[in-house]
Length: 264
Image 1: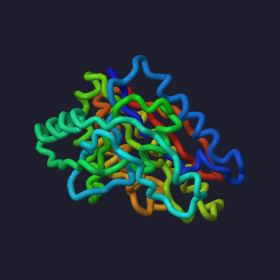
Image 2: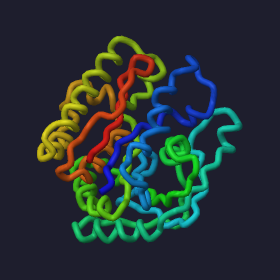
Image 3: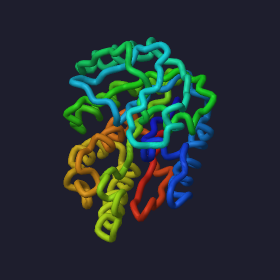
Image 4: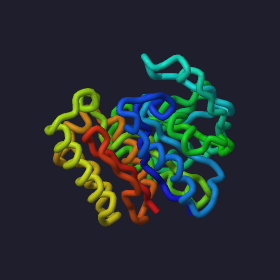
């Protein structure tokens, strides 16, 4: 059985350019470069929910050969020449849609969309060989935690079929905090990270109800003014079922606490 993951994808194409300080993203890059090596077996395919795609209903890519969607702005020219030619997984997308339908969850297909930077930036680091098929999945634009948790639960059988489920976002995502971190932002990010880790590592049967109330957590809105980068953890946690959760990486980046989690 494959696990499910909630991974951070950094800031824009941060792993492929110079940064100040130069080691800002090195710890996250090292985690991403190694997390697939922790799997007991190679995934047959990957279902990846990206924080950078929202739609009226959960939407699945059936593009067999997605190009890259450079949906970031103001970065060096060479970062718009990156490549990551992983094949799409239209059959997996259709299988996922069928599981969602069985759970009464509406979904849609998109046959044209390319891999956005919530997909190709972390996965180019994690799997430069780019030879595992990937089905990209959107958030539903209302970002409802219960809906995405339920969707994850519906998709859990894929884990038994050799599919690795990944939610790609950030456990902290307040752009003002990144631009001008200070004591208040540090405290908020640490408080929220501590709460999120406690939920992930706590009793599996309490995760859904706890995540549904995430806005009541300490530092919640200071860490996520809008929760699109947090929402992928709802799906990853839902796909976990009764599997244990664990914080598998964490670091303070410019004073801001950021973590990654594995379920199963």
